[in-house]
Length: 320
Picture 1 (cartoon, rainbow, N blue to C red):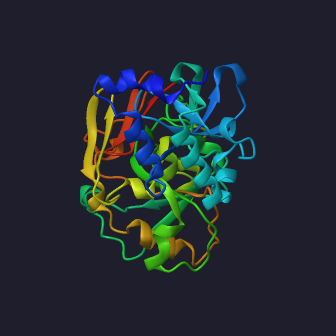
Picture 2 (cartoon, helix red, strand yellow):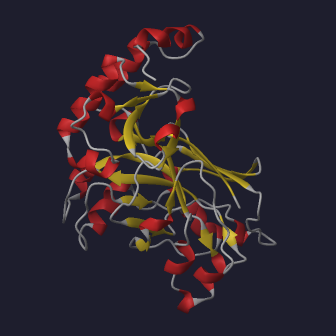
């Protein structure tokens, strides 16, 4: 369903952004909320879009320009050309798909790398009486752990201690190696919300206490709802960040507690590996995780986990 931009005026009259506001945001240096989605009528077919204000739908970029690719990884590889076409699509008011017609996918699917950072919040270190790291603690998840912003988290039979971790995530926009800190943000396409779901028994007691297996069960990396381009955020390192389980707030902090900021993480990791468009970084979690509660609390079937970061959005996942 394609809606002309004039059909959005009724939403504006209800107090939401006007069409002119939407266009201005789309034209202001790449300030956009990029999403991946599939139509209910085309399940399995991935499309890239630009998310309008809440409830106003998504602009289908490939519908506007058939030369644009289907996936976010490929879209990011088009660089400035793709972003310019996205701005044109947004300003045209064409190819708007209503939310009732689509399902939001993770902003990036099948990333080459999912890079995670441990112990990266000062208040989280204090929570467990741990020293502040002098260098970033890096681990990873397999790409198969990535799931959508509203998809289910599956409890594995192999673990009885599954925990939540709200995190600020960012996505690499262009290829680089040995990136300098002062240039690092130019390699970041944007920011999103993640839940670093963790099987604490496997992370802390099994498999030689290596973290990988406890972090990378299928569905253990909900991501979304949108990739908010870097230009849209005044300061990604000063955002309220919180997690709720069944409506109760369990984590409530600010990204200003991060020990190693985005620029430092990009520079550090790029010493070891080449960063590529679509690579996802999870930047650590604040205090309030279940394992350090007294007594410890772990996720169970039926729980609803909401992870939220101001200016970026909210993901909501049911535990099954």
